[in-house]
Length: 361
Image (cartoon, rainbow, N blue to C red):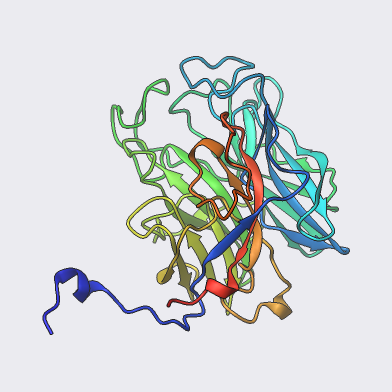
């Protein structure tokens, strides 16, 4: 049988592939659409004393984002500009109660003055460790951004913030912060402009900090993932010599499985919209391609005793929806309520594996 080059590259999908997933989406109460309020980038979900906990980026703005050329101390450049990290709880994963701020941005001159956002939380040895992204002020189109950590003895806080970031961009490259990163004086490493979207995993007796990198001289959709490893959650963190560990990916979503690390790699790059796995946490391989995966997914982390299959820790969770440019396919009679929303106030919805449509047909 004659085969084209495309078909020679194609590997027939296994209908019983345990890594493959399709998704369905549904609205939630308490964290849905609200004019003037942005809710986005949820953390992984933890269950503590019978309740589900989630942390997320939240900002209340007087108007939709105005861009970097018009931003002020009160007018946001982006949806996540001038944001804080809030948290919410739920008894069933569908109905959520917003509890209030967990970590607020810093005061005048602080390294996190402009914003704190995109958090993830690790529960380890009775303590909670939150890693998140920070932006200084002023924060222009190409201002470097870093990763910080806060810790607490209760999921309700109070949270103590680190005195400085725990991971900063690679120092290579030169760019005028007011200009686009591609209009640089000298290009830098793949993570020389910003380190974003952190996720923290404890494995092999060490703390593995996965992050998204964006570089000076690179287009903003050329992001990839890296990992930095430390003996303590507070660092110092040493970047892996194999970085970047993916050639694709935007928001970092990772979970432990069978001694290795799995991840949802979406939005950016030649291997976007895939689930990948690295037995050693470093060398990722594509396990399955996905259809309409959740954006900025925060999956529920089941206990290790229940982590018995590849997607056990990626079965359901929350994600954000950008109303005017949502990549979600509207289902049925618009159950997410996207029709008629004409302003970009991001909000959270529930996603879960669609078990009836999970296998290939």
